[in-house]
Amino acid sequence: MSVARLLARQGGTTLLVLLATASPAEAQLRLSGQADILAKSGADERGLNRNFRLDSPFSQIRARLFAQHWLTDDVGVFMEAFVDSESDPRLNGGYIVINNVRGHEWLSIRAGMAPSLIGNFGLRSTYFNSNPLIGVPLAWQHRTTLDAAGLTTASDLLRRRESNVISLPILYDACWNLQWEFMGEVGMFEYSVGITPGSMSNPMQSSNEAGVQVLGRAGLVPLPELRLGVSAGVGPYIGGPNRDPLTTATSFPGGPADYDQRLVGIDAEYSLGRAILFAEAYHSSWEVPLVAEDLSALAGYVEGRYDFLPEWFGAARIGSMIFSDITVEDGLQSITTGWDDDVLRVESSLTYRWARELQVRVDWQHTRFLTGEEEPVDLLALQVRAVF
Image (cartoon, rainbow, N blue to C red; front, side, top):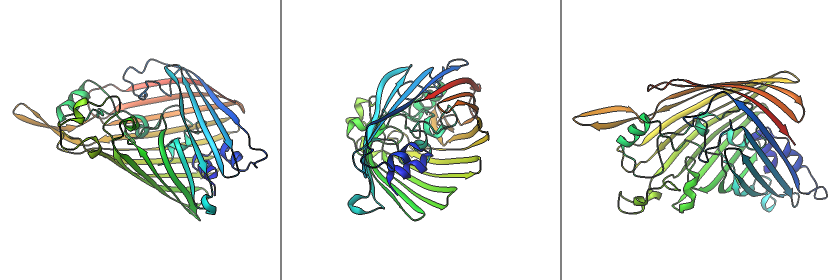
């Protein structure tokens, strides 16, 4: 199966299937996209949905333009541009896909600025947003108190937690990362292995050339309606625009490349009639130079969608993030506490297909902190989406 078809099955995307079946005579530059207009209740003052560039899935105006061109039956070029009312326009990335490498149907290559290969949310949210909700799962977006400076202490983490200062998530896919990826499938088994700069927490680290990340996913499709996967990755996370200059000096043993983020995860997808379920769970740990313990976090979610009428479908997602404990010396006593606040998020939506190219969606998101003193945050949004 070609990479285009594999991506299509991973994301539920028909667009790439059409491209994969096109003959060279039909191959041409194809432009398509989507535009979202949104109204919401209140402002995201704590940045619960904001990424590194400070835009959000709940921004008032967002648009994507996707370009694709198959040069031959087996070689294609893909690019995506992005516009958001709360950040500067940008080119998310571009990459080349080569199928049937040296005549091997089980080997394809993807190279360039591309979306992450692990799990199932990154791919299905990339191509015209198969995400049936507006928000993003906690594991893929929620920013923690850990920063990329490299000089964070246990006391710093506690102060940042109390002041609601946020920085790195577990996984970040709002911008694509430079990567080489080898992928394919044999029977019911599928695989993907990639090399990228930086880490899943901090792709911005890639500008420092401080090492590479190795990612991999092994999948099993025992039934057409069931897909299972295991993912893992390891790579350096310290660096990027927020790196402390002292991290390149003698502040701690080694350099930024010696301190990794390690990640393991599982994912599942199951469809039955009009219903489809997705689930992911990840455990991540970070080596922090000035903290005695490795920091870790566990995050996961379950999401479901049901098409109960031709024009209507509903969706819901529940997810949580739990953080490990650290020990902080406070005067003559030691305090053991989580290095960030545990959090629970519930989100639901109702979508009406006004026409094939137009959708209207009502979405409610509830974020509750299971530790600490922060109050729950509710967000209600109305979104109109046009696909062209």
